[in-house]
Length: 370
Image 1 (cartoon, helix red, strand yellow):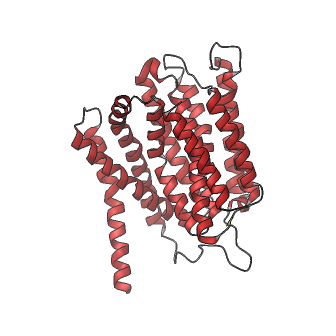
Image 2: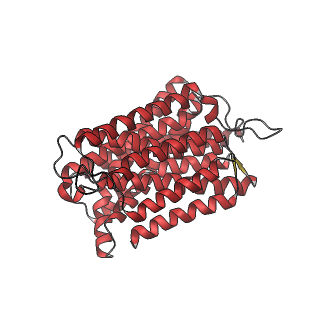
Image 3: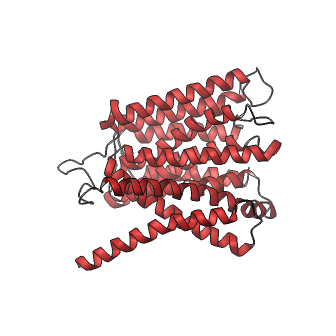
């Protein structure tokens, strides 16, 4: 039995080590080229391998540094690379890329706050009847998401200093600084000031869920190796997502679907590591970790993307459209209200998971059929 466990652990280490490397090599070979169909298929397989490897290495790092630092590492790493992808696409997209930042950030908010949260609640409730988490930490994270989303995605549709759903230069600078400051405050509260608000909740008469899942924490050498491979895997995920995006765009155009569908599909691929990590945490009855990943990713997506885009707009040509349309505003308001009702009690059932997934399904459907 011990030999079998040792062999499985060795095999896992091997593929999670070589998976990101092979995916990065595929990214280097395919970057800037017109890829045939079979090459796109191979890159898609490499992308999947990189996603699974990223989840593994994120869990190794999280086990070493503990919560909520582990969730923060994955959320920030994905978002930083995602920001680089957005800026790269906007730099080469011209006029047609004016809504790319808005579409990507809004898709990330809907995927994290409804898709990831809904699936995690569903998994946790199916296994334990009721999902439990810390209302103080989750409520503060949700308030941060709602504030950032309103300041950066809703207000541009109502300001009058600039025609269209755009910020003036001064307004964009204010939104960027405010977003960055609010993100910094949230990270400080999550990791130091009130770290206990973001730790998994112990059920009555039981210890902390999942505490016995691991034996010894990894060594410093293993942790640094996993951190490096995590970053490499995430670079490969986002880069390979960009490589397959022309094929997705052609498929969307051939099907007569709106171009916004491309942003949704790419956001889904980029957020796969967080989704899988959140679901695995929910299965272990660590719902707070799942919420940390979901809300933390949404906060990082807005709090880091908007300042980066504001800075890049100095060199980028063309308009920067950030304001949401009426349909998306309604979905955002509905998400905020339902999320508050989910988080405040500190307990949730299958019903809350189903409600969040219904909102997410409406978002996807309305993206396909606006």
